[in-house]
Length: 499
Figure 1 (cartoon, rainbow, N blue to C red):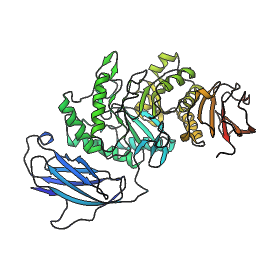
Figure 2 (cartoon, rainbow, N blue to C red; figure 1 turned 90 degrees about the horizontal axis):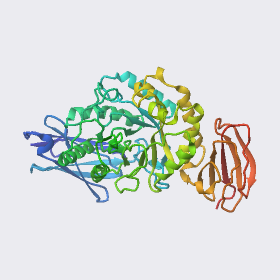
Figure 3 (tube, one colour; figure 1 turned 60 degrees about the horizontal axis):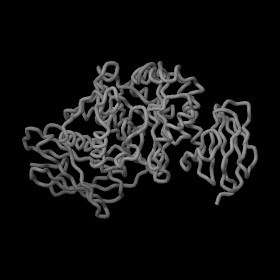
C-alpha cells in the first residue's frame, strides 16, 4: 500500500512552493524490503506548466517513509507521478510554483561573462572563507556554530569552504574525533543531520564548497562502480535541491603524487556521473593538488578549483592563475592565500605580511579568480579556520581581504576579463573600449593599449580605497604616472562617451 503523506483520497491539496524553493512530499510504503536502499527505486516524473518533463527519483528515509524533493524553477502548475520499480501503484499529485523574490536563487556560471559566478540575475562576487572539520560535527555546540555564522555574515563572507564535508576526513588532527555525518554506508538518519545544518546555511544565504567532496580523502566512500552510482543518486535525491551548493567530486588532492587515491581518469569518470544525475546543473569541480588543473577543459567540470600558486611573487601568482583560466568557466583560488599556513610558509619562507595579503588578494581578483581566504595557525584544520573560536581570529587580516572585496563592488568587474596583453606592467581587468582597471603593486608608470576614445582617469590608493584622485582625461595610454605617496595603486580608466 502506497499512501502520499497527508493526502485525503479524492481530494487534491493546494500546495504552493516558491520559485527556487523546496517541494517535498512523503510516501508511506508498507512493503517489507531486506534492503530498501537497493531493493527498489522510486522514480518520479515532474511535468511543468508548459508540458516539459523532468525525470528524477525519490529516496528512502527510514522505517516505511520515502520522500520526494524537487526545486521548481518555472512558475505555474506542476504535476508529478511517482512509481516504485517493483510495480506498486502509482502516486500522483500537483503543486503550484509561485513567483518569489525571497527564495535564494541557485549559484550558476555567469551567463553574461562566464569567468564569474552569479545568483539569479545578479553577479556573485565570491567572498570565501575556509573553515575546519568540526563545522558539521554533532559534538561542536550549536551555539558556537551560530556565533561563528553571525560573525562571518557581518564580516561580508558569502561562501564557506567546509572541511570534512561531504565526507569525514578520518585523519588525525583533521576529521578524526569529530562526529560529522557518516553518509556511507547509506544511512538516512546521518543525511538528516547534515541537512539540518545545510538548511541553516541556505537560510542565511551562504554558498557552500564541500572541501572533501563526494569522495573525500581518508573518508568512507564506495569504490565499486555500482555502489558509487547508488551513492551519488541517493545523495542528489536528498541534497540536489539546495541552490547554494557548489559540487566537488573529491578532495583534497585526489591525485597528489605522495598519496593517489583517485587518478585523473577516475575523477573524470565520477565527475561525469555526478553531472549526468544532477538535473539542476550545479557548478562542479574537483579540489586539485598544487599545480595546473588537468580537468580545466573537460566537459563535466564547470569551474576550476586551484591550490596555488602559493607565492609572494605576484607575477608568478598571476601567470599560474591565468594558465588555468578557461574563458568559459569561473576560477576558484581555493587554497591560494591562506594566512599563517605551514604549507604556504614552507614555500615562501615566512608568513604573509599584511601587505602581502592585500597585494595577493588584488592580483587574484585581477587574474579573474574568486578568492578563498583562510586564517590558519599550522595546517588547514588549525588556528581560527579550524576552531572557529572568535577569540582566535586575526581580525586585521580578515579586514584587509574585505576591503579588497569591497573595492571591487564599486567597479563593474563582472563586465571585465583579465587582459595582461594590454598593459606594460601591473595586472589588468578590462572591457576594451569601455573600462580598464590596472593594479600596480609598485608606483611605477604604466602604458595601456586603449581603444580609440577619451577616458577619464582615476587613481585609487589600494591600501585605502577611499583615497581617490581624478586627474582629468586622456586619449593616449602611454606612460600614465601614478601618485608617489602610496605603496600600491589602482588605475581606473572609463570611456567618457561610450556608445
